Image: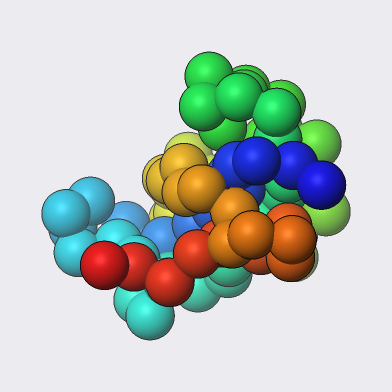
Amino acid sequence: MYPFVAVILICLNSVAPGACNETTAADVMSNGVETELNCVMGWQDVVARSTLAREIGKTAYVKTLCRRAAAGTGKPAPPR
């Protein structure tokens, strides 16, 4: 299992970056990673699979979050 989960958010330009989260994002994806640094690397392949990929830089933007994986699940631990 990966110790961290990169949460990849695609938010519309109408959503302020500070308000971009799992609830306000137009698309939410995740990817298990080995280190916190990897949370901000390699997400391009994941985003390319999104239906909104062609909108990045036009009507949408990408925001990444890094979370510790919940023990034994490989999924993000609940926010504290």
